Length: 367
Ligand code: BGC
Ligand code: ZN
Image (tube, rainbow, N blue to C red; front, side, top):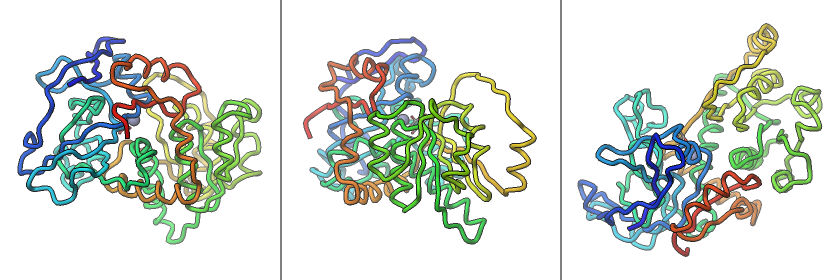
């Protein structure tokens, strides 16, 4: 079968590779689930992997099959699988358990291991192929009513984790009723963060570069959130006084300097969630005394978040269901750039690099 792969370490090496079709029995104890791939989303991580900035091939392979945002249909299950049957829609998680105590208890997103295993990213093949097999332990069932948007579940889980962690951390306050939040960035993650916060009834202000009108700003406003272009108004130019205090800020711009702007507009007792993976070596000058003083005197907290374990895939399915009920048609509008058929893999990267895309995805087989 065909698979879209890269040669880690060689920039621009994306190509079609050939792999044997996997079998349910490749997974021990009858726990295998054979999945026919329907759609696979791509993101900045795939771009970095193809640019040879990131990613490693599985042991014994020269190439790495990419794709970590999968969605598919169960074709066959092993005799030890009770959770799924052929015909079910599923999404598989990305990171597989390592050795740390966090992995042992199922929170492999919190691993302290130096080497981690992520399908389509590091040391394990991904989902941009025709079929894959994995253990039922790493799959989540998708209700029929979500099949058109389920390819967004993996990026959604990154937001689920960030917001859940923020609430978890804020239990330190005994009582926390977040009323106002800011989201930095209106890319896929920023849009999904705004959605999750609006679903929780929070007043949301999104800061993003481009001026209105634009597609992303329109989507933000459809959620009943506010969109501020930072070309027209700098982040710390009175916005906190006008639209805050911000009890929660979700940073998803991909620009590390925005972290320091965010720190300066976080409200008292607030929580700042960082989700941008910034591989560069950018430096900025900041008012360090002022930032530190406000953090100390305001009992503020800042937390980084990456990846997601099964719990967040499950809560993601619930939030997606609520989103479909509350904002019908909204999630579909994020699916801006489809590419049809594995043979057209080059288009994935053209569209990723082209700008204006919210979600670029491969339609591997019809839904
Ligand atoms: C993926 C995460 C992953 C991270 C780091 C992101 O693009 O969505 O699941 O943990 O990259 O590899
Ligand atoms: Zn990703």
